[in-house]
Image (cartoon, one colour):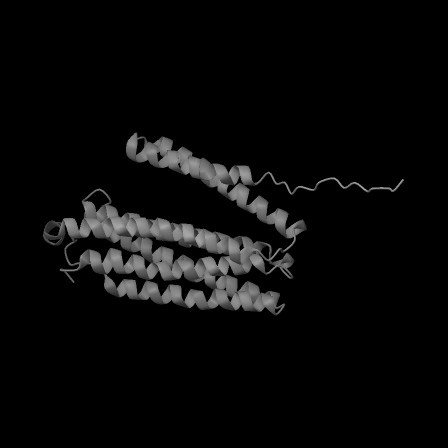
Length: 258
């Protein structure tokens, strides 16, 4: 009788998908609690839980991958589909902004644009910062490809510093506009402006978080190029998206009162 070998099916399992998957639920509830229920404390608690779950899930997943995972080379396909979903998000918000701008053109220019217009010089500076950061993360990717871990770390840190500077300057600009009475609830322009720039800033923060995780696991990064390549593609997308966001929120939004 011929002997037939049997092989048990092997399945990859991980517990870290659960806490990560719960993050959108808690963040959505936080938004509903703040804007719909007018419960800022509850919104803060729900948002905090979502943040903790996000950090727990992503760091756990990363540690699992860098300790015993294999680089399957599927990062390009995965990040392309992820970026496609992000394009839908940005495209929907931008389309809504443009629709409101055209529908309420007269009132928009005469009543809604802040006195003195928008700070377009700051927009130019923020654009330069992000474009320089695209170069630094590309250098980080190339350094790892050539086995230069120290260079990889250096360029990752440079990218994180530039991204953090972008967020800091953006936050100062938001505070300046808010003090002038241009708040998210002031008018339709304010709502669209803070929604667009806030969504983009949140993506910058996610990118910085990805880079931080890569930096913390840099000692185990050799031979695993997919994470930095995926983070690099994502960061380039965020930089390109800024051109559309800035052009819409600042230039189109304040057109008529430069």
